[in-house]
Image (cartoon, rainbow, N blue to C red):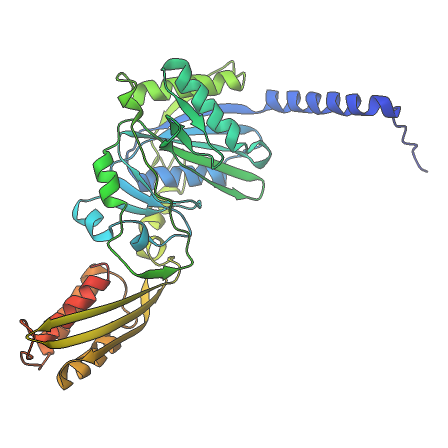
Length: 382
């Protein structure tokens, strides 16, 4: 009725288990197909949609996929971040730079076509961030004379201090992906400019990015470009995984025949409710004073937001005309439930400005209503 279990002698137990693990890993290695996909697109939404499609649809027990891609100028922030606190949202829009919420955590990064993105998409049992980064460092230093290292935050550093790569990941069920940037010829002035929020005196519990010094690898390797990086990284990936048949494929992310449903994923990543509406709570508290000829007008602004909308707004005039006191109350009421959307906010403020009956107040060089509205504009991302 019962089968006896015969264990090896204790002294042989460790070696027996080690051999068994090695045999199982060898079998798994033979079964797993290692593939490199290079996206033809430079659209951030399409590339993230392809990454998500592979993660959701592919059988990653039998495949390990390295997706390589680049984008037109974009600011990409983590799933649990607030875009208005991570970048200059109005500045991005005026320059035609895409603003994107990804599905992994981590901080905000700037992409352009001088940046290579690497996504290691695999079964969770093979999720090894340090090994992935070491593979990249080995590939790059094997081709170019670059002083690279991986720090304890899983960043790749150049000259021990300049960040060329930031890591983020997603794990769900038995699947995982680990993706990161490789800066080789990025517009660093634009990077610094756009990854700087104009908002001040903000409070939040949302994930906030850590400011880092960056430098392009091309300063050390003049012949580095997208094509050579893809070739060098792919070759090292195949060699490390002992892949005899090298499957490097160029793909169109929006090929519905090959990736059915990927277009719907791309569209969902473009929606306001995903990019902005998933934002955690934050609050803005400002004080403003306008004085002239020893006459002062003062106001306190306290704005609370959640999911990209103003949920509570208190604008209190502590010194000024009676009309200005009343106008502050109207502003507070009208701004509640408004989206943190430039056109919606400007339309609301313009309408209120046109309806304001306050005359020029003593001590103010401009209409007191306009002064108060400018205080609001200086507090919000408009």
